[in-house]
Length: 176
Image (tube, rainbow, N blue to C red):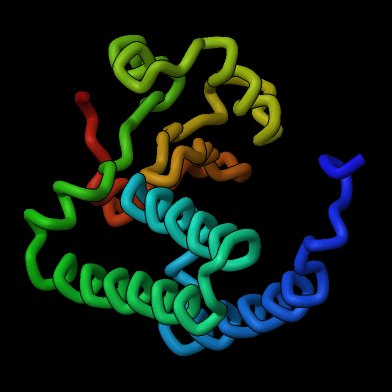
């Protein structure tokens, strides 16, 4: 039964540490900003995994709460600095962020872009259904966002067609 529960398990310390780490993460996230945990880029994903690893190590090993909190604060500071540098140096942003990719232009499916993004046509069609598309001529564009989400842009419902504002597709790649 030792593998299920051992009297030497530091359960009280784990519970207290969980609370301390929980409130530390909330406090630090409020200070640095919610973007730290948002679903944005591969870089952000790696950060989230690293924070999870630190929290796990803090709660289940000999790492102190203070040590874990300092490690999380360091990572949050690093993400804050990298986000500042990304705005200042577009090349850095391009290196660590995926640019959105056009999957459909109007009713035309861009097969090469689907292939490059490793998205099956059936997955695209499912996303169209999810976006309440009943006819392909209702679509202005479909974009694979840098977060991995798929955005479906609809034609206006009224009969007088208005062109899409160019800013909507700003930064979206038309080719892989």
